[in-house]
Image (cartoon, rainbow, N blue to C red; front, side):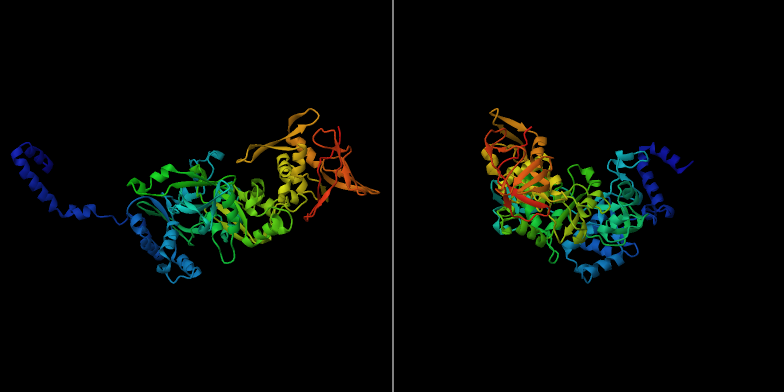
Length: 599
């Protein structure tokens, strides 16, 4: 009979059960083969949690010190699941040398904390998982384009809520860098942590990104078959811990700045704050975030706390400070692009071309510009996709002859930021609408109606990019308003939405004008080839009509005389007045009426 059978019989007798249990306990406690220590001690093959796992690895002692000094050691060994990308001792020494620190302890604690946190991402990721995540979950063989490869991961580094100084002018709130001229401030809510890119072969191949694109921003050769944590190559992967993985990398990865942080930081004499000031002046929109406001610890206990705001930038391709898009999973696959000129070169354009400092009756200063002009100076520098050298977007900007283009030789800075790629320029080429015959129209407030009509009708590229010499005859606002031949009809000023109308003097009624009609009118105000017949110059227009300019009395007209107003019957003489701004493709002359070509 076994001891368990005896126990069962004895347990039926209640009086003896307690005695037997005591005897049984002594038997087991005294058994050398089943000691408590041996039964429950940690097996040698079972790894520890993440900090412990990092600390016992060869060549990671300096990163172990980073975890200790920042207090992340206790977090990684207590709760949560993470992936740690640990730089080798050689990588840490290189970082210390490049940044002139004697040792890890010499790094300011707040900076060390940012660096260390940027090497830790949420959730445990093996090397294969890093290479097989799609925007809609794990990639499968038959996913096709329905589940595109993702390449960004969320680190545990989060910017704090940030204070923005506000100035109110002309019934709108703008952001000012100078707090001394501000009347108040707003605390902007930080929605998410910073993201880091992870590059691997399948992602590059599927998205048409080349190793040279990677080298352009990270200044190192991309070797196929490897995986890169931003600019660091993974040397050893999949070191298993109880609550995640450790991957050993060959470089320290500095926390990637977002677009706001890039533009706001000066590097020696290199500064982009003038461009940032224009963004702050024209584009910010603040919306109160009630949920975030009431979730603040102070609010929960009834104390005072700042209202938290969401900050967006209307009409820009992305928001400067936001680390993620509104649709969170899209952040894993999407990135943006930004190009900006340094202060010195940007101010030269503003002073010598755009404003009254040029010596012409231009805009009083850069804060007096209409929104459509600002968009050509600022908004088109923001792109909703990253700017890689191999892409058509880069080719058009840096190797093409489009209206908006830049010189590749003027690139002085290339950053792969947390929410955009950034290219800094030490020389600025304005959109050709400012330097061609259309220059006076975009720089002089007196041509605002005609300027918007050009954009509305889609003729900007045709005129500004024309290769030959042009005669351009725009009509100023006062003339258009006097004869009602082109009336700007606002639909929504905030959204810059409008159309055009004209007063038909034959029918005595208002009529809407289509964009194609306005396009034909404007193209026939632009002359191309010409020939001389005595004192008369015969000019062919971009619209295919003929204009005659009599230089003996400085009068000009189409095949029919010009009239006062649309469908008018009062004949007026056209007398061109030169606009003296230099143009790289011809001459501009103001005139008070449209050329008339009959039917």
